[in-house]
Image (spheres, helix red, strand yellow):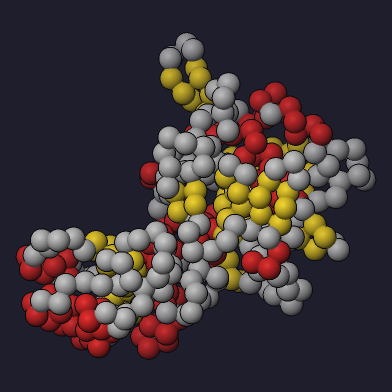
Amino acid sequence: MYRTIHINPVLPGQSRSSVLVIYTGGTLGMVYDRLNDQLVPFDFEQILDRVPEIRRLDFELTVIVLNELIDSSNMKPSNWVNLARIVRDNYDLYDSFVILHGTDTMAYTASALSYLLEGLNKPVILTGAQLPIGVARSDARENFITAMEIAAARENDQPIVPEVCIYFNSLLLRGNRAKKKESVHFNAFHSENYPHLAMAGVNIEYNSPFIRPFSPDLQLKVYEEMDTHVVVLPIFPGINHQIISSILGIPGLKGLVLESYGSGNAPTETWFLNALKSAIDRGLIIFNVSQCDGGRVTQGRYQTSKQLDEIGVLSGSDITIEAAVTKLMFLLANEPNHEKLKNRLITPISGEMSL
């Protein structure tokens, strides 16, 4: 499933922490192959040649390289479960984890892991790059080095950031609050509805009030199921009955993330509301999430959302689309009680939304 590379940049007995790096694929680990004129994954056995700064780190480092590297566009729920298993299987062996991942679906993976790793009490930091590590102006080295530094950071012999995060371009963000917003600039990820957890400059400044505190009593429980019978439905002017009926009529559909306008508004036409209500009466879970990156769904604030509330559409508050989709997949697979599922969907379970 993977091969393991052990790197100890510090003298025996001097290490302050141990970090397991999991390389899944993505831009960060690519180098230019001049012979074939293309980018190819580099051999992590040569990581000290590519990132010589690692020699000056004061923690032990082990790298796991998946046998089949994944472009993040091909990331699937089964891959999220596999990553959760790797963390579980190595949880007692390492103090923290860094996952190297393609940027396109990184926020989905971070969100999913925040649910799958219940009781997590160690850092799991995802990072990547906009430019390959083999390119002169690459952001890969700084992202990689600082993500490991943050993962290894401890205070009073406890991890400073014991949760799933994304580190990118000097900012540490809660994983299930982050979104990819840029494809051509280095500041790829933003968190509009939750403050950053740390900022890396000359020093790494931690935003402690917003970091989930370490809890010595937590025990890790890893879930291994995600239900993919979900769909995202963006509302747009001109959406018609045929489109709605076709989507709501998908065989086996269990959950729908409704991307509504503004603070949770949607058309008030009778056919639209009747279609949604009929689907809800059949047992379909409909989760209302705003198309806006900032702000939140407040069903009932306007007449155009009050009727959604009345027919049983569930409010997603300020959750991101990525966190909403993965939360719906997680709960559909792991919460058999329909009423409890609905209650957990609108309640924060891993810091992914505000009440």
